[in-house]
Image 1 (spheres, one colour):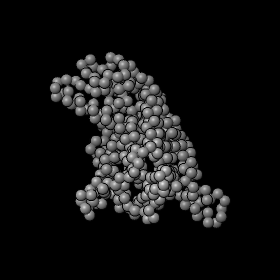
Image 2 (spheres, rainbow, N blue to C red):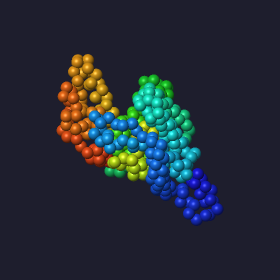
Image 3 (cartoon, rainbow, N blue to C red):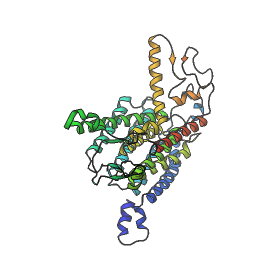
Image 4 (cartoon, rainbow, N blue to C red):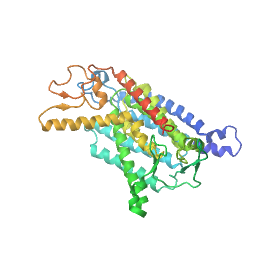
Length: 421
């Protein structure tokens, strides 16, 4: 709204109005505003929740040794994050931009699904929303995003073409016309553009349609996987919020270079017109998470709940898809990936053991972060643990910080892939 207001005022020669055209200015303003809203709104929201005694159910002390300390802590803190993202974006973003609209829709939709899950846990059934409903909601979002990127005339790229001038230097030019494309970026490969349509070249004239259909299913899978990975990572004070803020910074850098024709040309990556609005959104995302950490860092005064974790995963997934960096998600979201894999391994190995009348486990607990906070003697002696490490119980703040460090390393690696090929 303010963007359009100052754009209108600029034509009257009002001093300073032109600054609102710059992504750097709007981005920093959005970051600061979202952080302040998160901290300001957060304190009132926590007081409101405590006054009405709306708190998470007591945690299982066999899993969380610090569960006693967390009694009476309010949940649904994801509402703080969502408000702190949406308000600055409505004020400072270009609301006619297809990518901004997709990100806002993703945030609100998955935030609503997460809110319903948290509400049902508090008021109706401690198990919350049935998993099939959550998966169906995530799949619906994935299909919507995929089809929008396929059918919208505004979701386009300009393909980069490398021209060798001599043996030592190369220059990159872009095709003059923006096009619809299923091209994605392959990390660590020099000529790193792959079109999904090329996977179906055997279909002849139908290969483009097949490539887009495959793309839509890819988007759906990525949204579901990252959203659930984020949800699994939300198990310790500050864990998911801190990891996600780091991922958001990495994605903001990738979105910025993809939207800047000179930087994109220097790095030999595809130029995505309009994706600069993702920088505005992502800085609002990062600011909201940092402000939320003011209250969510150990010892937490509020938990984000599924209201926040589902929305966070969806935001990260859709951003990576829009900038055609979905194949970088295993690197950027390494922690989320490990959480998901640990649960899959634990569940399947336990089932195999049950069929043989044995109690097998890969880790002491799953998701993987839980295995670091199991006290000696806390597990049944009948369990056979394949990876019985660590021997002791780590402090929750130490586990969280070490997961943050891993995420920083992997996010840095993702950015470095722009040059290492």
